Image (tube, rainbow over all chains, first blue to last red; front, side, top):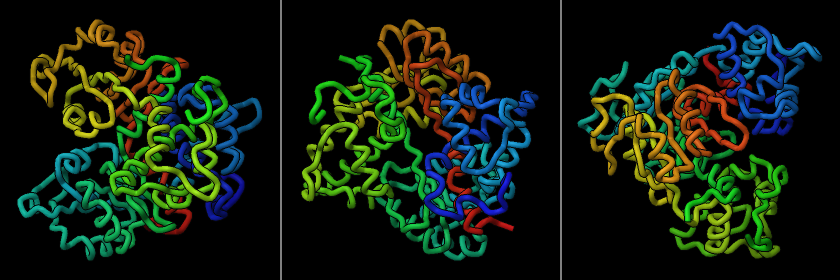
Length: 222
Length: 222
């Protein structure tokens, strides 16, 4: 933190979730700037990169500390390191993948988890034909091993790519083993208890959040 | 709309984007309820399904009209139809896919676009080996045909699954042909002009938006 040793997230309700959800985008943009050897950026430039207004950016960042000097912009490297710390990205996370169908295979081969600090440490599937296969760097384990392996590896994050009708059951089981954050690829909305987080990766929902604007502009089909 | 023939989205700035972005989740939840033959739902039940507080749900919906009666909840079917109308889901949308690598193939085989009203009408790739292949229900077209085909088919929505270093260029070209909403699968943040919308499907960003909570609860790895 810039001004405060304690995370603002320790005081629940103080930081809107939507502000937290934008921080990874700031990290992404700052990483791009750093790669391009840009040293200083202001909220307007960041805003143009991310399609977010600059007052919104300043407000989001203000929840977490004071990062820039009035009129001088932010140090790209400094802000990046601070935000990575806030997001818990300054150390690695063990991640389990459940479901090694076509989608699970794509996940296990996705090259951007490791550089971002997410180590895929175990993959599980219920199909005896799939178990034992080498996918990416992992050998697929039988679903029966899930409970002890997730506990043994202290996995807190899981990616679930099982069919819709198995999703809730698999997520309940993972949560029972200590998983606290889940990425769900099935087009269903699983229920979890308070304190557990789910993000749904769902291209249909993403498209639908844009069509309303097209429709309101009269760009819809006949 | 319930009370108003004009979309509230015609009056820009009145409806927060984050409220709009939650509407597809309400549609998803209401569809599940309808399938389960639930006829009436209140904001508390919806909130439990979606991990959103009930005051937030009532506020989100209030931007778009008056849908429920105090103390009696919402008619599932009525609210679903209204929200589908607001989101422009009451008619079909033509969608083009650019990039038919492993990810593009998964997109073209994804079974949930069509039931949601998104018709995949064209797929393009720059690789001569890929062009002409049948993937899902489409024959892959050469990228050279993109401009006239997108105009001819009046495509307003595109899904872009090309490598990171080609993403911006492909998106610029699509926007030049009339595309106004884009789903981007590369881990970069493309720039678009005002009035054009991009949603990034990015599992790393989704994971990162959850790790901060884990870190603040001391659940991080050593």
